[in-house]
Length: 357
Image (cartoon, rainbow, N blue to C red):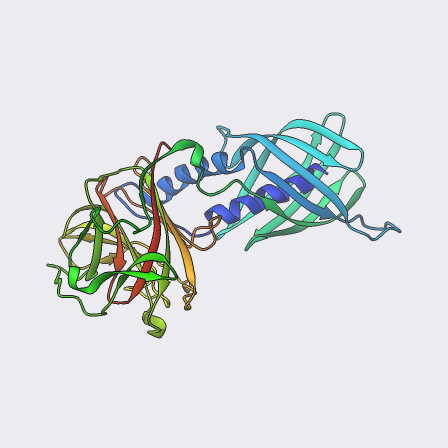
């Protein structure tokens, strides 16, 4: 049913936007709305939604399958309104129609609200559907029939190679010529089962930054970027409990002007946040409360930066849903690097892509 499609749409919004934090000179709510509008359109275009629905009063209680593919999503002039050109498949129905939907928010939870919307040739629809944590659920009404609905979504990859140019690759098999290490004594090349890695050997660093900020910093030489993503594998080599961490440095201009993301095991105002250093001790731009699930295994980290919107997204293992994200335009471009505040890690397979958002 059309109404059931609406619920799937809302689920997509929750996945994308529930962790958005906004900072900068622009009004926070206005800037967040603009970014959210753009991200909704980009996220939903080409997305496929697959779920189940039930019908009240039916003798057959087995949930039936529904599927929707959105070929295009665009923001309309009216507040909270979007037009989705959508292929709808359920039962004997297989058609593509433009659908104008209103999305409202209960705190950070998106809710689709549809009241007696008549679609020529299809009927009249109403719905109330909310989404949370990768799932959607709600109720639908189609003329005299109604029921419940639930399901999941198949999204495009959070980072697409189609609009990206690889500008840096490192597997550490050929040494460290591509790196500037601020404290070389506490970093070394390792070989495990014939595979080279790059690791921090001591929690204490001889590099003392001019303001409170990480002590283990390895920067890529001769590379400054504004719009990019960096992906790498990392393993924590010392169990320091809640202090386990790794850092990604970006828009690094000098030792008092840069961003970094701190993937601390247990977040607090100084750990597990996206940080800024600007002629003062590091300051959290986020209010993240998610734990970073460190163990002794290898993990994948990716950071995406869009200088035009100010978007910063950090992913940990799950490359679909950001672990943290924020909006900030303080620094437009700079160098990129990896490291730790004061912990011990091993790194491998670093890839940096220049993006055109």
